[in-house]
Image 1: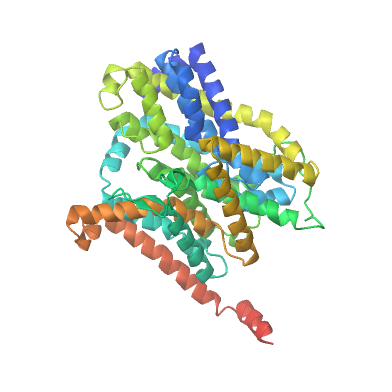
Image 2: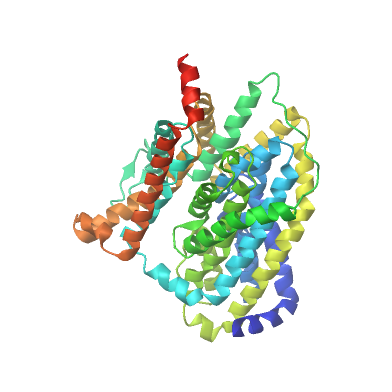
Length: 503
């Protein structure tokens, strides 16, 4: 309560209000541009914060992070291109709703869920920083390995009709994750003498190629043109009945986002995929997932927007940045002579309270800015397909090129697009590949560091309660999926389908 009372006066600070609005606007635009991640957007704004007051500078950077996490869902829904890594889980149902002429509703659900997730995350940040940060410090390399396996266990659900194809797609993603520098020895792996590959392949390159570029290739080969119902150029928020239906997936997304956010290195991507998986598991409308389910948008969007706030818990409490975005925010602290950690709450409490106030303004600004620019986005998507595809291609190429200002990224994205085209033709799912790519480094590095610490003693993976719990959950998820698929083989409609195929 004291924290809230000391935060309220900062809401009247004009510099904080302006910094929050500018930051969230830049974040939404940056997140909506393919290839421009939240960390890149924050890095672009960092030089402008040198001459700003410390509180306003930090508010601008944090607000940019909040806006970018939401902005990534805009291209995911409209053009099947996740603007950020964490928006990849939104693509399936978001783009499917767009194809049904419900782009306005899909964007409204995303904005509504993002707002709720952000508010929930901010409340946790303000009230539970100490306990949650203590949980983050309890994570060891074996626990992070178990966390990665828990994320990979979601593949059992995302595999689609064929578990074999899902596993092949996941292994392909894990193979891509091994490209670059070895996390333990520092040696080069599969770089073929190309220095641009030393840092590995950015997940956004593969995701944009798989989802967006392959879609353009499919449409280029479709002379008839797939029918798409034009969406009305306005945002539609869910009605009372739909809002009640979304409570469960939003609660799931908020809970998982809170847990994942305080774990350095976990981030919004794992939270979004796990939330999507659990929302589907507990939904009464499982068959709608992947075909335009509102719950398939609400759960991951609530999760990754919750992470945008809770990720600041280990940063503020212990000075531990858990992602690229929070690392840049840490740089903002250091630029202004502030050292995040326990003493920050005592020596510079006004800075913390001003930051909380600015983040609250940014969350409100996210709704206002979103409602202002999203109708224009919907209008653009309704333009003739030839013009729209040309614009999307130009947007993708320019966005990818700006990541490192090199043609290697463009070539990798185009290669991923070609692979995605053939994966579509052979009916391989994309999401297991993305999940394997995103989690591959976390799983491998944590596994090998654990063995280094234990002297190759594998019992270290069941040596603490966090690892045991996470490994048990992963086993339960996989076992549950196997049992569900086995039971499906004996359902009457499945048997009838099988009989008709044989006939």
